[in-house]
Amino acid sequence: MLLVPDLLVELLLGIYIGVLTAVVPALVAWSLGFTFKYFTGVTIPGFGVLVFGVAIAGIQGGLLGLLDPQFVASPTALVSALVVMMATLYAHAQGDKMGAEFPRRFTVRGLRERGLSADAVERVGRFGQVRVRVAGEVGDVEGYPPLPDDLRATLRDGEWTFPADLPLSELELRLEERLRTDHDLAEVSASIDSRGRATVSAAPPAGALSRRVPKGQRAVSVDALVPTGLARNDEVTVSTAETTVDGTVLSARSGESASAPPTSRPAALDADSDEDPDESVSSVAPTASAAGARATGGDGRVTLAVPRRDAETLLGTESADLRVRARGTRREFELLSLLRRDGKRIQRVELAAGGPLDGVTLGEAALRERWSVAVLAVRRGGTWTVAPRGTTQLGAGDELYVVGSREALDRFEEVGRSPNAAEAGRSSSDGATGRRSGDSGVNR
Image: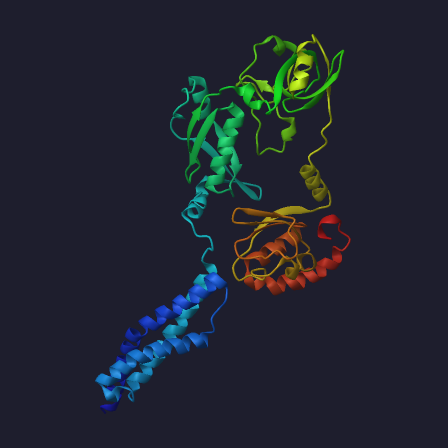
């Protein structure tokens, strides 16, 4: 009758001793699994880690056997050995898993870049946007004159929209560039918190025109018949009685605005709009709209950036003939139009750890044959690879910018996120590839 209680006591004692003995082997097994997976991407065989962990536990058990010689042959030792082996295997599996999921480039800045709150994101179609507003008063920059009251009020009441998938550091850079472009500020510093509230310090415009003149050129104003819609950065040809001069428009005034005093800053241009940056606006008053910023046409005055040798020629003429040179179209917008015309869309897909594309090259993935999509660019951290080759290595966390039909993009997005969707995506895409063999351009 006393056999069962004694056996139960030995089993409990074995579990207790096994847990105490397994602390060091489990810690070593976790460290080995995490280190090898994180730095080399290689998984150590579980049997090797098990043997190593049991060897470490055997040293401790040998010391215990010196104190109690009967311990080695007792059921307590067997139970404790089983506990040590299970703890070692479990710790090794967890270390290997953490090594695969832990970010490779773990920095404090990386944590900050992911700090944009979901409450500040507004859904627009399939993409999100964030509205940035100034919190508090706009500060002054040390070493610069203070901001005028009207410009300070304009900045304080302003609102700017940016894509929501940008990190905070990129949002701050874009906001600074937007403020510098819109208001021609001499210096600006911006800091954005996780809710899209910005703290801004700025310096008033200083030498707006001189900072727009390229190095080695001179700014010269001429009276001419100004074409309607002429704007800053347009390339023009000025014909005089003596010669012909090529230059770049710095500002243009015509019609009623030609008699107005020159203004101190260029008009605002939305950096994230679909408008061609080459059609940016000329210098206007801070309160003028973008629609009225371009020259309305008629007799006016144009300020050009020309080479030094041509500056004296233009200064000696009273009037000149002005012709605007064609600069073509933006190829990226033309590409998007062609893709949409063919029924294709562009989508960003982030690869998940352990998925079918984790650790393979683009050539091995065969995206065009299996999922009927093509990769335009790969973004890894802050590094872009445009038109990647087949030898480009893919990994967890990479952002792929892919093009294809809506159905193909939906299938590929599920494959990129779910490791279990590989077979389903492969089988469904085999039939889809044959149906899309006549599609144009991007999938070939």
